[in-house]
Image (cartoon, rainbow, N blue to C red; front, side):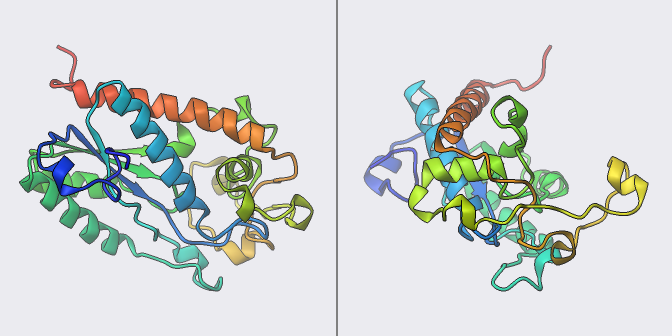
Length: 252
């Protein structure tokens, strides 16, 4: 039993525990090139959340990881078989209900650990936070915590070298041999503003990539994944400890 994982702990332990920080991992269920499982985002989140919480717990922070929500926003992938979409309005309702429970139970801080690029929680945090002023909400997008180029030749955007290396370390038995993977080539937008990033539109995935991947996975190794995940979880754990102990969030 890991006391910082809600799914594994029990009422005997929880009833006397003052939770300083709740963590809600939020992933997606979608194809990841030809070689990675549909639950890649969720499996990575389970590992990252649990390991970060373990480090934070051992440093004295009373962190509690809630069960991972396995569905994310996949409106650009509705034509890809078994990619499961959860609308942002549904996410808002789920987040509101979770916040309602935690706020009424004395938890004062909630971190959404985001593991899917289609999820965007900023406006939800604004609205839900205004309804529950005693609950501080924030988001960590683990993909942005570290500079992937320090660990990988070409990290990639989706099922590339970074994610493939992570999955080789986390669940190697679920990763097909790399020779079975697609090359992850992606077709960019034709319009310059989209290419440069100062304009935005949702990508229609089946028009962008032939194998559902964006990024070349061919240089991935389990050792690269191990090194990256170790650095990542220590960074996130440090944030958890700092946030759990902080009574005044603003410099005075």
